[in-house]
Amino acid sequence: MTRCIMLDTDCAAICRLAASSMARNSEPAKQICRLCAEICLACANECERHTHQHCQACALACRKCAAACVAMIH
Image 1 (cartoon, rainbow, N blue to C red):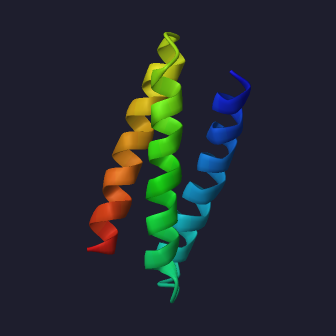
Image 2: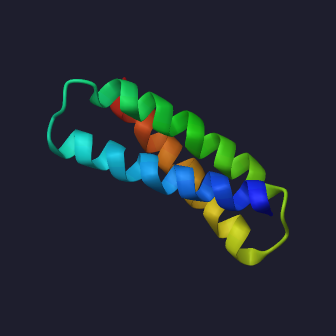
Image 3: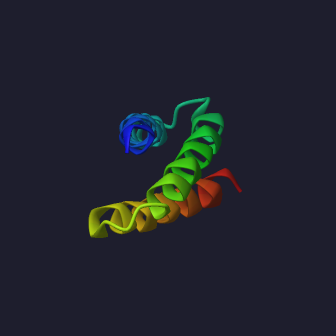
């Protein structure tokens, strides 16, 4: 679970940065969103390995966030 928790923390941090950069219409927002999508997918993949309900919910939220970031990029 250590890797899961570390990825959760990194995912939360990059999601905050992505949301903030989009709100400010920041120049590197697309690059930040691309990285956010990658980290969210890594987090989702790790969380799905665990049977805990909160891990499954986290994986679903991460996949939704990754999809939103990809949509923002295009």
